[in-house]
Length: 318
Ligand code: CP
Image 1 (tube, helix red, strand yellow):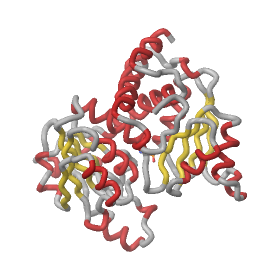
Image 2: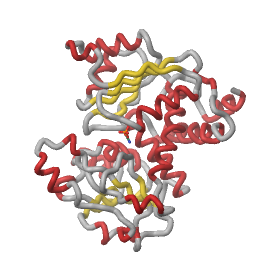
Image 3: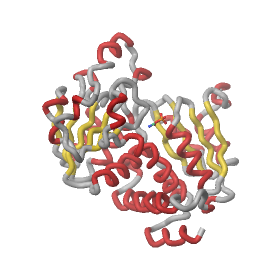
């Protein structure tokens, strides 16, 4: 991922670039302990285009831009000229006249790729339908490293809606580049798509699939829980059938490792009971906080303000 490029998929960056993002995020986390603002992006505008609801992704990108000294141009819902029939490429070209970087969430898969056809500025995919959510996966990578202290020799369980969960799709693809064992735990109707499983196989990762969490909980280092994505079901009776198959509660964690991290991209419904929030292994609100640091890193790298690890020292002077 170079300055000026788009971030549409996990396929857009390699391990070295992910390493730079993690290092940069770590630097911002440290700097924010003593500063409220680091003026590295003063004079830059971020357009945030959200055609689906969002709390974390939208606010963390906006907060990141503001903490970096930049400005935001927010769009929410059906308020653009897409409603009048304007094409995504034309909208991309128009946004390039006003903003220096854009982030878009849209229910249609690959719509953000269409936007990029007309865009002259970097565009970040903040979720396109059930396809991908790559910035969430970088937040997840950062959280795994921070909570477990490493990115190798881990067993990571993905639980819940592995069919429609775009964060799970991107995060499985990203983590399969590391020496990690996977356990995919889901109802038969919500299994990981073959296209994502192919990446796991191509990267020669060990994996197993099961519908029994209690059979595998004792060997898991990170339990990545996902919400059943009601909005993606064509048949709501099918959603009703599977929506509460898995519910993580205090009892679920009795046989789990003391070092377990329970993650979730959030929002959560019933799949993690509130009693788990009090368990020191609950990591999902740290994950939310990490979203700020990782998105500060992404904005500075894509806008060419950090090009390598050596360049991080310059941030201390700002
Ligand atoms: N994790 C995530 O994408 O959350 P939001 O839908 O609130 O942005």
